Image (cartoon, rainbow, N blue to C red; front, side):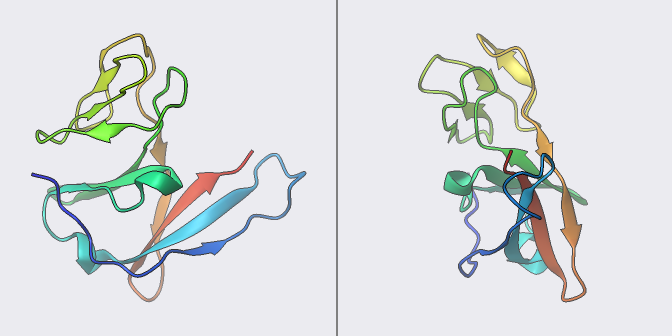
Length: 124
């Protein structure tokens, strides 16, 4: 079963500039209390990531296949699959079938002083 977060529109803060090799966007995905239940939250798929809660662990995984950067879809068992070329990934982002040969990247996250989860997405 997929979990859907009831979150407000993301607030993006841009990195230092377009010529900065380490530029990133920071997406505020709302209070961490929106992600209390174990599951896969796909509200930010189109922005480039999924939020995944497993026990005490809350992570952000890229929503792009590592083979050719197609957007991934989710399955009922919380795994991911690519409709473009058939790659599949387990709920932790590990490749289970190719042609992809790299696991899904985990994106850096932080919790701000308001208790909001912030996800950092590279722009370069």
